[in-house]
Length: 570
Image (cartoon, rainbow, N blue to C red; front, side, top):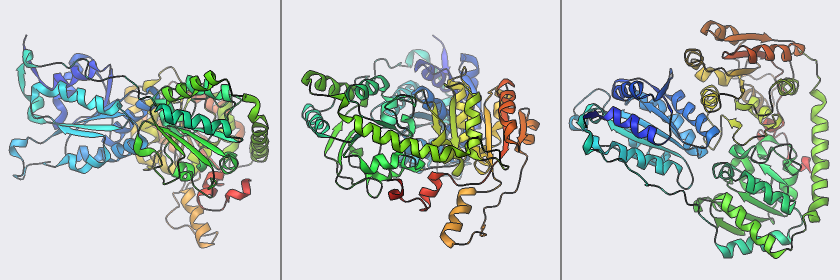
């Protein structure tokens, strides 16, 4: 055995986790890692900003369900990555961030980029730690991965000071961890399972809300079997979109209250709400009135006990466990009893279908709208005529994102990625998320639907896409403004002309992307959408359709600014 340095140990340890690529930006403190990756075959997707590296890892994770890995340098590089860490934490996305750092032996003496880095992010990670021995690098990477994927998933940060990355040691001193984490699932308490079944059997108008926990526990088959056996309608939210396909007869998605669709009626009129793997946060109006009713029965299943009743909603039965095994436990027990009549809820299903039909009939009048600027509903309808059903849709912005979340259908788990997801809600994450998603699913069409404002945050990563050969299609919902903020101001102040800091002016983003080496077209006529999108998809480059749209507010935007009342949907 020969000598190995810390950078080599990082590369090897990451590959032992089944990771084939990392996302990062070069810097002094991580140079040994980059050098080792080039020698060991670990692919590096290098970005133009550290925040984008973390978001790319996030996008990769959301498509695969496995941790993405980002590598960023210490000091300002690490500081640039913090927003991405918080986003992952607030969205429960598993990822591993490896950062370099200042030599501990020389700290507190005025050295360049000497920072207490982990203090900045400790409260927004599942775990963070520092390596102080080169030989223990594989051990610490194993610890990091274990924390990222155990229980409720989330980001972890591992700091490795530069001297331990450069240091060479005898390879025989290194202990490579094996069998250091379990894949065992947490089963629900049998008494709680029985209590939940009792409440479900009494229900007359039940609904299921399925969220992130269903996706990350890979419970789509268990959810489908449970829904079909009981006949209970399903609303999927956040990373849970697609765990039951939107074209399934029992799927009434989207399920976030934010989209302000027919789900508002279901939420208010259900008598029993069964929540699998979803936080009762703002995206579902905290499970509280006025969107939900005060006297509803709530059953909540989550792998994290602190999530049960998180919003102070009264929870009649809380079950701690992974969604896949708890679903199976409930289903098996119900089958054994033989009491279930799935036709019991047929009138409730018919009621929901009527509400859904009326909602979409009213909204879909704009599908064939030939007006200019282009109506968002016409744009999204035409996009869905072109792209395959199994395409990945990444949605970013405010009003643009809310239109997209409402209108785009989802048929596969993980194939809807919401940029401002979780309770952090950062805009501008869409482009790097889409790049990470394309790397995870290179055989799928990946479409980023984004506002013009949100695109600007990480626009430079078009250069990354061109350099690294990552062909995604960007659809810009371009109303030349911060549209949601503009309309919210007008609602608040009662002045239809107010425009405080919301005007962005018109920009030829398509030309910018062409100058980077991508493909771009400006679209102002709705009849040009379909042929232009075909050209963009077939360009095999990062491509952009810069679409001049009507700035009309989505139902979700109107709901958030208070101009849509819940009782108007009843």
